[in-house]
Length: 66
Image 1: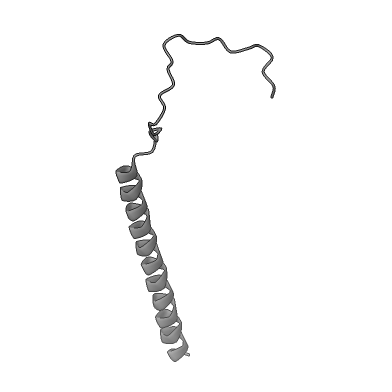
Image 2 (image 1 turned 30 degrees about the horizontal axis):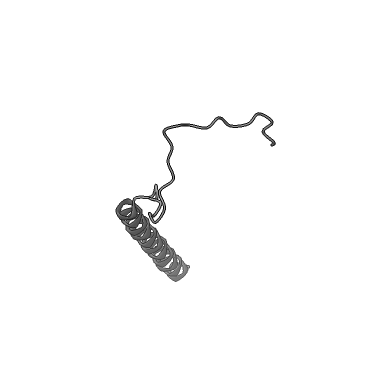
């Protein structure tokens, strides 16, 4: 999309040389979120492994009854 109208200059905006731009990302929140998601993933994988083990044991028990 092209903008046809020119942007107006703001007199309050100043350029500061030698300074670093701040990021809008909170590193601590991002790290905590990453750790939380990783733990949730691990718990879900363990639940799947337990479900598979239960399935194998149930199949084994059912095959013994035949």
